[in-house]
View 1 (tube, rainbow, N blue to C red):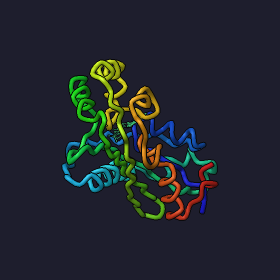
View 2 (view 1 turned 120 degrees about the vertical axis):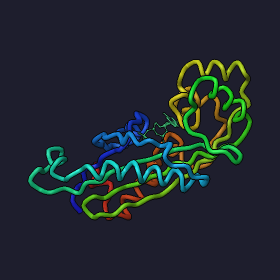
View 3 (view 1 turned 90 degrees about the horizontal axis):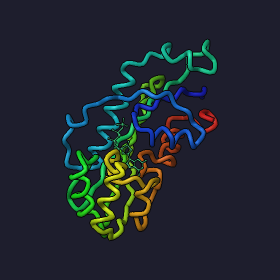
Length: 211
Ligand SMILES: Nc1nc2c(ncn2[C@H]2C[C@H](O)[C@@H](COP(=O)(O)OP(=O)(O)OP(=O)(O)O)O2)c(=O)[nH]1
């Protein structure tokens, strides 16, 4: 299989950095999808549907010749893959996305502290060349520390939780507020790298194709 061009349909610096740290440098094409258009009560269905809509939105506008200049071999039509993700936090029987404002973030942390939440990330890979879309989901349990009101206020004041679906960044200051996780660490950040590898293999690619 030829070396695919990877497009990351995401505006998330965290998702981009996860891939770059793993030696993969994607073309960045944020989907700008209006996520409010999808209302599903099942978290797996919700994140998988949103990831697929994000990926297909970008794939619909991509013609292989548009990305050929990025190809290591412009004369050779390349495989083009579009990767998209979506994350939510499930706490009890409720699904949460990014907090809308600091007040909401404080209230969220007052619910989260001392509890165990589940961070769901949906993953979609659209293989434009093979006309195949793979969708999958990874869940990681997160044990939140019993933080005080003043710690919550200090954390929210940093602004970090406002950009995160779970209202915390496991790779940032939020790491101080998480006792432990059960499952994939990169999945919490927003892209499960081992799941991405398995999805690539399922499409017939290997890591060597991307390194
Ligand atoms: N650095 C970091 N970011 C996190 C963490 N947990 C969640 N996030 C960020 C990654 C994503 O930007 C965001 C998840 O929200 P979404 O899945 O709706 O993605 P977002 O709208 O930000 O970007 P995208 O839809 O991919 O363009 O939260 C974490 O532990 N660390």
